[in-house]
Length: 248
Ligand code: APR
Image (cartoon, rainbow, N blue to C red; front, side, top):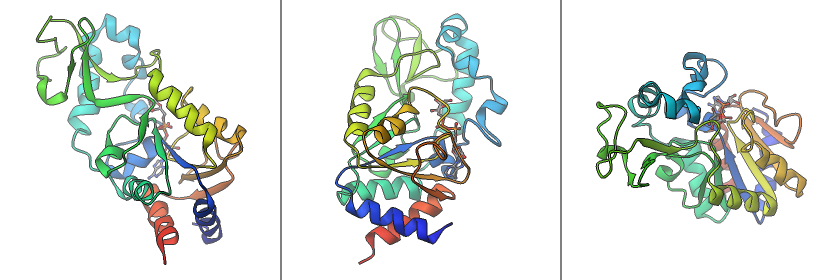
């Protein structure tokens, strides 16, 4: 990891009056949650079509079998890691205004971040598609799929965004607003493959923001909007950035 780039990033972050973070699956890899793309990516083993909204309506049982395995059996008890925790500490010290995340794993909140805009929803909420009653996973019997609503027997869907589903308007609007105001965006662990989420760093750049990127590999952002590329794993880089930022 390039120490000069790290010092530069810390300097930029100290001076910034409005910093946000934009995170993808990579920030949770060291919490045991594999990424969607790249080596051992989820989409190498599972067909993303099973998480298309139309497919879910047509084949709720098949879709729920994948959902249960992916988001509840395997990753249900993942813990936040150093990278999530450093972002929460930066927020607490007034060095970060908000996190915009593509992740549905709730790990930013678990680490203590207060302002988290969830572009793709959250796996810790479920909703009945018929009467809109909300549930939390513990209230649902995931051994009896597809889960049905206790009130109206309607089909229950996790409250995260499926392919082909609109982005939650509130999260979208607050994310675009934050990106317009940001002086610095710390982009952590995203290929930048999925729109409209991946527009956020571009939108911030168009409004004059400096983009700091943390990733062990190049992404769609690296050679297009990234100003400071910190090559490495999220926990390693964010741990070092914290030492730089908080040193007296
Ligand atoms: N630290 C930081 N970044 C990492 C690490 C790590 N330890 N390990 C992997 N990465 C990087 C990879 O290099 C890659 O750039 O994380 C990124 C993971 O990319 P994706 O799996 O495409 O994740 P993301 O960009 O968040 O995907 C966006 O795609 O399937 C949809 O809804 C899903 O929100 C997801 C969206």
